Amino acid sequence: MYGAITAVKDLALTVRQGEFLTILGPSGSGKSTALILLARFISRSEGDILIGGRSVAAVPSARPRHRVPKLRAIPAPNSPPQFGISPRGVKASERANCVDRILKRVHLKDFGGRMPSQLSGDQQQRVALALALIADPPVLLLDEPLGALDRNLREQMQGEIKSLHKEFGITTVCVTHDQEEALTLSDRVVVMRGGVIEQVDTPEALYDRRRHCSWQTF
Image 1 (spheres, rainbow, N blue to C red):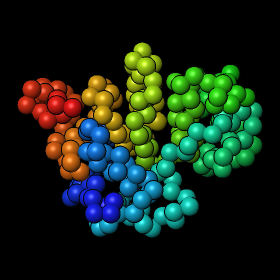
Image 2 (cartoon, one colour):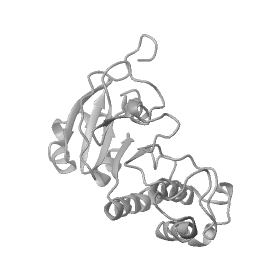
Image 3 (cartoon, rainbow, N blue to C red):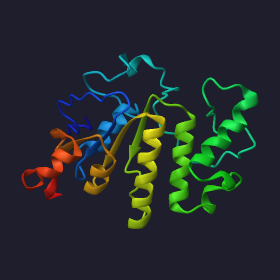
């Protein structure tokens, strides 16, 4: 709740391991609130959130592994990861190679020494993905990840995100108001409006019933 406003109500949802689930809705639907509840940026007023069967309340708030790191700078390929993020279970002597592989995978191998201000919008998004992947999170959270990009770059990054998800198999929860993005990326789509879930289905099923679906109106 935000004061007297209930942003999300009676939210009951199971995200399957390895699934790419997108919460789709217009502004004010509660989709971003649902995501930041998962990230523990705000506290829930009731109920619980479980990741791998464990309540997020049991995870120290200083080390929520499921957060997506904020973009600050790019770790150089020949140096250890920056920002307190390091590959889990990797020896210190092997970390540089691990960073190199991740940057190469997101097509930024030769950009390791640059600052964010020297990168284009899609390159900055690739850096954010690299930082998230190297943190080895059990859940990857994406909040309007492609909203700042033009149409051509959005389509390009949609393909990149889908490819990375298939390769790494990380359970992913994304929120967006973009219908095409939701239908393209997702295994399932959750449609929210007014803080409640209206529909949950596969992209194919939602598209087949599009004339009768509420998401067509926003």
